[in-house]
Image (cartoon, rainbow, N blue to C red; front, side):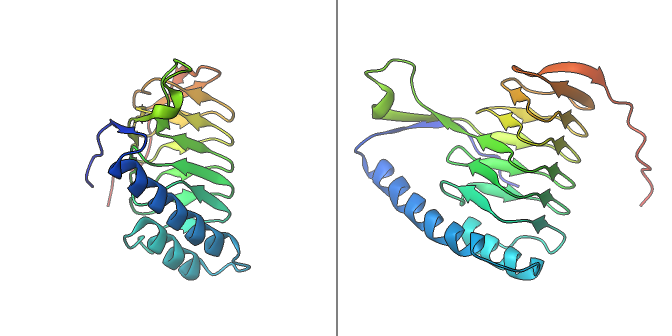
Length: 190
């Protein structure tokens, strides 16, 4: 998977106008996705694939509703589960590796604005989020721009993650802090 990089989009530029077009397109496709009254994961994957502009692996399960402001900057591996009411603000890029579990109401936020009130509406500052293999993001957790969640790590429900999480750690709180190391016991046999 291609790893996204951070950047800045200035207001009233060709780049910002293109972003507005992508946001409008994402709104149309997420409305289609969220209107489904079905448990047909093939149909959900089909519309989600249209949203992100690439085929989603058949091992992935996504439960609508789902929200995003672009979609085309989302990369999803195999055997990923995304529960209902998640929001992926993906302008900066979101990469979700194989085996990741994402609980309901998780927010992955890759963009923000300058602190200065006079500058806030002039630009979007964005940094990618990377969620490594077999991580588990708990209910209503928020992952902020530029954060990497390490392999096999767990983000507790309601945590706000502002800094990278090392592999095999449990983090919780606001801001999230390491509560303990996780002893990995997954059977490595194929």
